Length: 166
Image 1 (cartoon, rainbow, N blue to C red):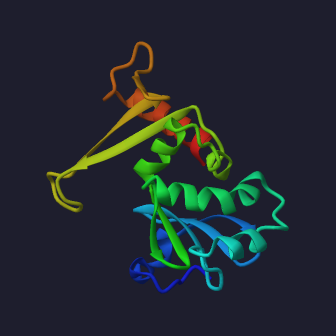
Image 2 (image 1 turned 120 degrees about the horizontal axis):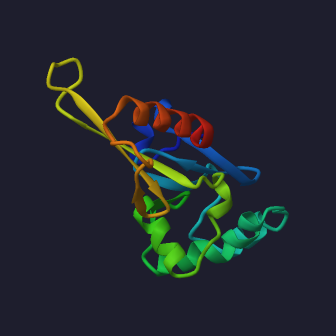
């Protein structure tokens, strides 16, 4: 069901991550640009059909979606790509938390660290370089006694990434 008729469905399947199925026929997926709640048969603009579709939901998220979808659309924290696909930009996921809406927290396991990887230059050229930053929550941290560019720091970052992110 991942290949929906939205404009972004032309992206390669590698850029799609299925995060959950709150009820049969409804998927929550992550693409490189946003989170999507989508269905091939359910019309997200019809609140009555939303209530009926999610009546047998077992997860907290599934039970809350019939109320949550109209609410986040009204708040401007999501958009209808089609009547069957609600798009939530990643920035808006943070805005949901600021409004004390925590419905999506259980989709991905929590990790204490965030590793930001960035690059300069073009791949396969001598000018290509990459860098990284390590965060604990929103605060950038450094490994004690190590410069961020040292080989020991690089091995430590790789270990942390393997241990906590994969």
